[in-house]
Amino acid sequence: MENDIYERDAYIKAIQAVNDVIWEWNLDAKMIIFSKEINEMIDFDTDDLCNLKEFIERAAIEEDKDKALDELNDFLNNKTNIYNSVFRMEQNDGEIKWLQIKGRLSREKLFGNKVFIGVMTDVTQFISLQDRIKYMAYFDGLTELPNRVLFFQILNNLLIRSIREKKRGAVIFIDIDNFKTINDNFGHQHGDMILKMFAQLLKIIVDKSGQIARLSGDEFVIILYDYKDSKKIEMICDDIKNYLKNYFEIKDKQIYITVSIGIALFPEHSCDANELLKYADFAMYYSKLNGKGRYSFFNKEISDTFFRMRQIELELEMSIQNEELYICYQPQVDVCKNKIIGIEALIRWNNKNLGNISPAEFIPIAEKTGFIIKLGKWVIEEVLSTTSLWKKKGYEFKNISINVSPIQIKEKNFKETLFNTCKKYDIPSNLLEIEITEGTLMEVYKEEYKLLEDIISNGINIAIDDFGTGYSSLNYITALPFQTIKIDKSFVDNIIDNEKNIAVIKSIIKLSESLRYNIIIEGVETREQADLLEGLGCKIIQGYYFSKPIPKSDLEILLMNQGVLGGRQIGR
Image (cartoon, rainbow, N blue to C red; front, side, top):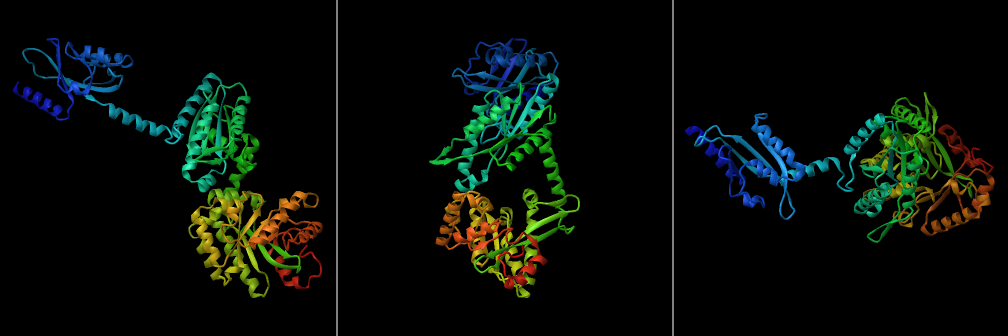
């Protein structure tokens, strides 16, 4: 008896130490009492209560009441060994609190009566924290959309329903085009605002007809379920494109965006969530390959395209080891002197299983997989070793050009690779020229601008390739002392009959003269084009009219004989 009382007093003291409410229910005397802490915990009058059941009936909100009473009855009827119940109650001011009630039957009997003693705790903050943790696990903090985890749960549930109910659905994969450029140009705060505003735009367009999620970065997905035909999907995609004809205005900045969209259908394409997302991703990437700002449905053509891409990716990994790569060289000719003054090195690949593969096909794959770093180092090594041999033989030319990817520029040791390889083969740094596209120029961060400045200050020249086809901006063109601008072939193709192209080239030449840039015209294929461009003031021409890209042995013959060539065509 004394041990029971001691244990009971110790239990009460332990509870009092944490400022919870102690309650004691005398089941036989039909009386319940609460400690004074209840007045601080909840706004509720307990004076006329006879038992815990009455407290639950009056305090618990309707949605939780039955469950809380069942838990109490199960304990009193010996169906459970522990009494533990959590429910919500509404305060007089409308505030909702979560209460947890725990209790146990005392082993002692006071005055012959059975006593049920326990503790009541305000767990509102704990529940809120749990809800927040759960929210963070399933929702994107920036856009408040479901995240990748919740997306797969939703999609898997819908796939089960689609099989049972024989209904169709679609996964629409959306990627913002050139989003990295927005972050680089305007800052990550502007980028985050674009993501939030775009998420709101999707909510307006989709409304209740589908579920939206943000997978990561600038990737969003829409799940549609139970639609009659593809017109519903096309309507949503067209609405997105039409809305994006307008700009987003953020802190006085007007920012336009486009998106590339890919669509996979279930059950037509698959009933597996991972496969559907992969197929929608394939279709989205197919949209990007075909000009961006458009949508594509997954189909056999796309499947074949990506099967080939996978083949190329696997074969590319062994291309250097298998000695399948080689360099072709295309001369750059000074038409006034009828002399080769520069050479562009162009990588080629002849694979034993796939045959000749165009750089336009395998370079993007190399960039996506990161193989471009290893590939780029191989090109630099191969080109400069060949250049060293030509210089030792006394061949004269002003520069050798190598195309580089933005991935290479961002590689930690890119600058050191250039300088060290030049030193290794005793190549003067001013003989080497690296070519970067306008797109690459816009992709590089401010840190890479410093790197480009270091490269230029150490004598290596930089040429802007494909000028006029990307995101031409005088801010970028004048930011660094580039030596050369290369006018893209697209301006040359129809120059004979296109006054606008002639006017553009004239303007670029005039600009370049003012900024002291060299001009190289690419893609010249006929004598008529060459004569017209020479008349416009273009002194350096590159193209099939003089020579296609040729192996180093053939280029060496041109270098050897160019001083005695009598005609205009060199290496035709």
